[in-house]
Image (tube, rainbow, N blue to C red; front, side, top):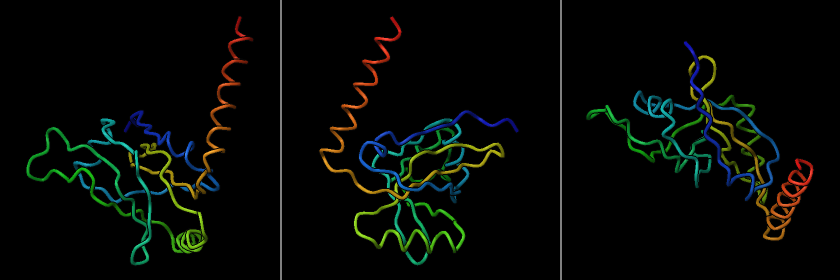
Length: 150
């Protein structure tokens, strides 16, 4: 099976958070959800992860309803579980108990086997002055590129 070029990013995550460590996790999906993801009809805006009953869940991820789906169609913003091994779950749970650390989805993609994978990151929120500094560096890089391209 040829992998489709699905690469959905959460651009806001790098701006709002300082990404400390990243992990790749699979997702438990229904049939119409994976079909919508393969069409690129998903969004990671305002998405976050949390622990409940010893499992890692992703909340507020929007996967559009499949156009050809019938009564079996899924709910667009339902909560989905991310299966991980116990060692990594314990490590992430301990880290999120610390103040200021959270788990945010960064990227959604389809791997070479045709499975949907979610890249999650352990992140720390940025302050307003850090965000301004990030924008300033980005503008400086853009100006330097413009000068060297002439």
